[in-house]
Image (cartoon, rainbow, N blue to C red; front, side):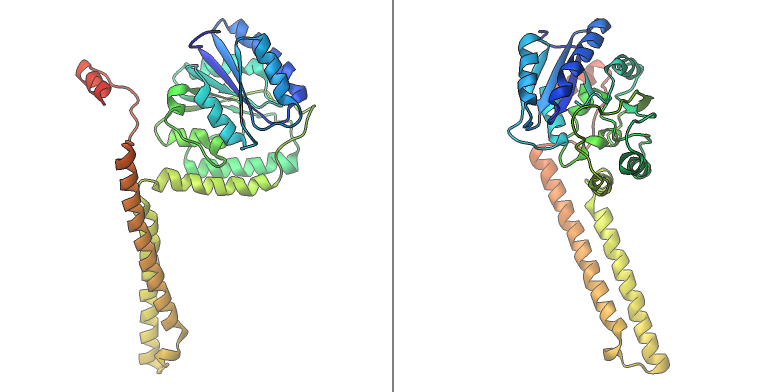
Length: 326
């Protein structure tokens, strides 16, 4: 086994016992033909169907293979994150464990990545999944995600992707944000590309995704937008909402006074008066939340020494020494 392989393939696994051996054999054949050093990481996400035993047998027979076993089912994002933390390659490939991704696409992903991209995402243009339950919801989700994040991809949900490890080191995952790594990376200046990849119908095992994933996907997109646009400036969103609420209160107060002067409406019995009070109070609360958020953000960055920027490269001897000192 190589100490520092060129390529790491990370595969989250949850109850895919029948698919693991043919998947491993396909990946091994492709990577051996590429003539580069490689490793394969299975991340067992609490499988209960005997998948772990199969992964263990493969790892015992092939020194290129390692298995990271989680204590229970934490979800695909957590499994991905565990794989990234343990991967040693400069290039990291992610794939599903259900044989729907094709290992023969790996060389194309790597070649495209090395033309100057930081991430190359697969596009399952000829996707072999049901139209109503998967393809149509995915189409809507991809359109919304591309519009909200500004990173235009046809297929955010395709697990088959190639990453430079240095980019993944800058990204911290939680929830179900693994699908939106390209958007998170794009927010720190990563160059994101997309290529068409093959897709096969599932023949063994059971799909882990249902229609409920669509709603969760939209909530994830909302969280993503807030993280990308306002994580370091919460006053921008809460303060804006507060000012809008106070403006509505001012307009409502003006209407209340006008009704009193013009037609003699009793102010104390006018619903607009209560709307005015409510809008102003809500506005003050929003602005206060924004202010508290600003304090928390500054405290966080100062306590963990987390920079608010990400450097692509440093050129020049003095600059390089400065970067090393930091």
